[in-house]
Amino acid sequence: CISSAASDVYKRQERQGQRARATAILEASPERQAAPCPHYTHCGGCDLQHASPALYADFKRDLVVEALRRAGLDAPVHAMVPTAPGTRRRAVFSATRAGTRILFGFHEAMSNRIASIDTCLVLKGEIVSALPALRKLAEGLVARKGETRLTVTLAGTGLDIAVETGQTLSEPLRARATQIALSSDFARLSVNGEIVICLLYTSPSPRDRQKS
Image 1 (cartoon, rainbow, N blue to C red):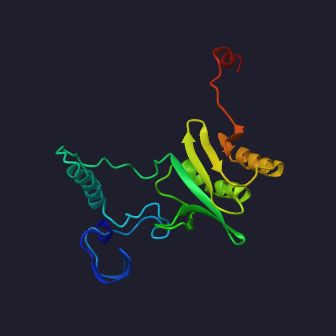
Image 2: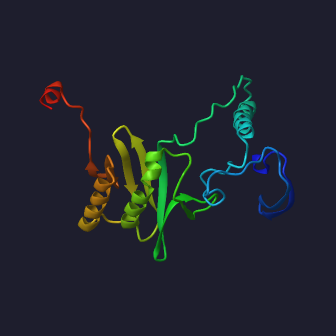
Image 3: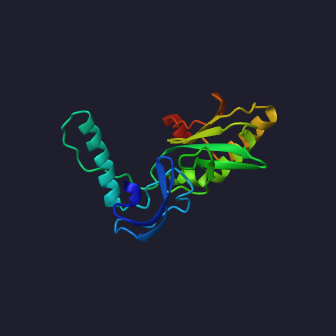
């Protein structure tokens, strides 16, 4: 299992059902590294940051090899082609009420709890920079019960935000959401499939360019 970082020596493990958690590491594997993300172990989005790039690549390739083997297929599997950090253009954030607080971020590992985040190393910088505005948007649109989801996509015209919520979009909430979207230069905002704003960039015609 890659969670042992190839060859860690553990002091003790706490077991819950079929899962176990190491409470101490006596001798770390050479393949173990310090996780670069400050939300590692709390956020469930990236749970293999403690593995070296080489170990991670081998692990991913072995998943494909094993899947083919189980299917009775013998096919060549090349090395994994890694994706650079800070290049993911889409993310699905969650928001929920916790008493008087609003939690906004990603789910914790194997949990319905939401880990509040203020950065993400895999996302494009444009999305990371918009996290405060997205959190503010979620605070106004989060439902009283249940979970609200914000699907954020970096398009050619900017950020496209699709909100799914049990909250009714009243006129005050619509006005607040519109103000946040406009002040944050969001390209489009929709709530439960209804478009609230849509700012499309159209290239100027040759005539318009001559006038300017």
